[in-house]
Picture 1: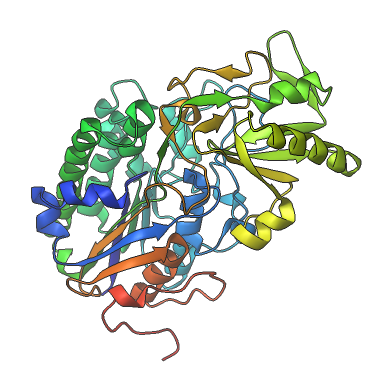
Picture 2: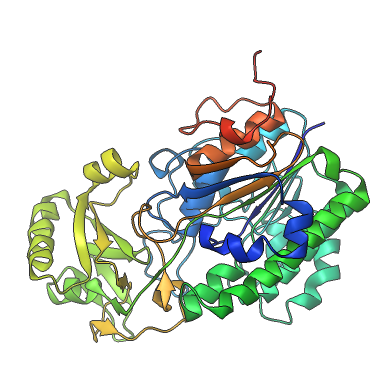
Length: 433
């Protein structure tokens, strides 16, 4: 019997392992397994595209998720890419389900409405006045899962968007899914480390506090596997999607676009119409140009800004260059990469440069979205019957994770861009052998 539990600890990096590895639950459930430091993320290094890659084994050019946000993004709140329908290729849940496995997911991005998940709490917020319970039901939670939600909703304390409350709730629900259903495949996404880094910076004592919580959550899930009697047949993974870098300012290039007549902005500051628009991915942004006849003009304008060296970006990728070098494709015309200390906003009214605050993940004291080789790197730790003991690797890519999960489950991933991380695996049956 092959089972996997995947904990994606958002924005955790290799440097965190020195502290975490001394904690009791990490030592109990993950120590002595395999470790991969310097796991390369994808571009843009933001949560939803990265988690789509972790599910599909594909780069954004193939799975189609290029931002946390949908485009056009002229609404308040900005709509996110919540739904599995945004994926253009098959994910691990569909493959596992087709192989007769039971599947579960808790607060994992780009899964809302996924029909291949048996026990599901989508990463989704209630919209347009709907209740949270109705939102979860509409996005895939069964009546049995709704009972688990009701049992643990007190942990939210009325604030569905804040951490660590959201994570306490999610981990408690995942624990109860293990105890009640023992799914063969479980993916869960706590984001507290990401939240504290956004708020206070990449490193500091605030991260240790968040790692203490993560260790307790590892203990909750590991103990549930033990109590249910399935720990010995479960491969437990702790992974992460991206790192973060400290930033000093936020800049809104849409302000300049509006002043050049490429955006129409209402008195409320909201965009009414557009010819060119910058969609922020934190420390990079996607530039959309509606009319192909305007692309050359916008490029000249961006080249002039780049030459001045004042506007927060250090490089301009055309869509073709982004596809050829970073496996990123879409309806955008350009990608702008940070200068290393500037984040980008979507706002279109002055002031052009704004002080940092944490009302949006893109404007905190640290953020991400930059080229994946920059900054502290994600990591992977795993332990279980299919994992080599004491294996230490330096370097892989998150695109290799879904094929690794598939190898353990005995299913093939023929469309994946990545390959299984053989260096952490014991002898595992290959599909077709």
